[in-house]
Each structure stands twice: as C-alpha cells, then as structure tokens.
Length: 111
Image (cartoon, rainbow, N blue to C red; front, side, top):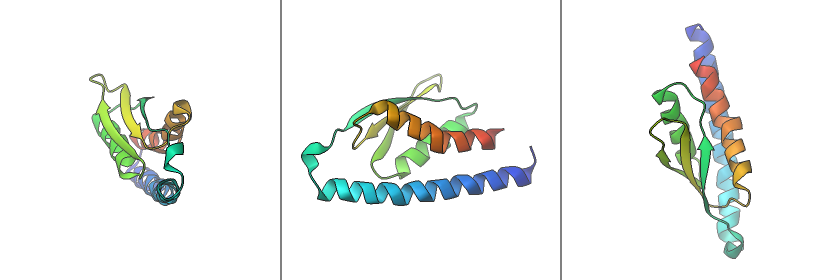
C-alpha cells in the first residue's frame, strides 16, 4: 500500500471522527438536558480485529475522544476493548457502531 493511499485513508478516518464527534456531542447534550432517568450506562466489550498496537491505540483514542464513550481497558491479547457508554440500551449495537465506524477505517489504514 502506498503512502498516498494511507494518507487518503487517514483523512477519511479524520472526517469520520469529526462526523461522530458532532453527532455524539448533540446526542449527549440532549441526553443530559433531557430525562436523565432514561439513560442506560453500560460497559461494553468490543471485539477488536486490528493487527497492531498502534491500530488498537488509535481505536481506543477515537472512542475516548467521542462524547458519551470512554475506553477503559484493552485485553492483554488486544482482542477486546472495554468501553464505558453513557447510554447503551443495546450493547451489541454500540459495539457494531464502533466496529463499523472507527475500526473499519483503521483496519483499512493498517492494510
């Protein structure tokens, strides 16, 4: 994979992150200003299919920098990322969203 392709894919990841940042900020603001009793916080185990420590670190950082989520721990074998989520009515959907947005793009960069 050429450097130009990786730079392009990194730019795409940056745009995806910005989109998620804005959407999550709006969602968290609504949740905090709305009915707080409806929140369902959870710790979600997200299976990780990345090849490198740098990829897992990038994923954990993207998750932590997005409002409403915080990376808590990565398993020793780098196969699971544990994430605290402000509102997770369906933890499987949360994990699928993380994999479909950030992990997918990082995996493309890894090649």
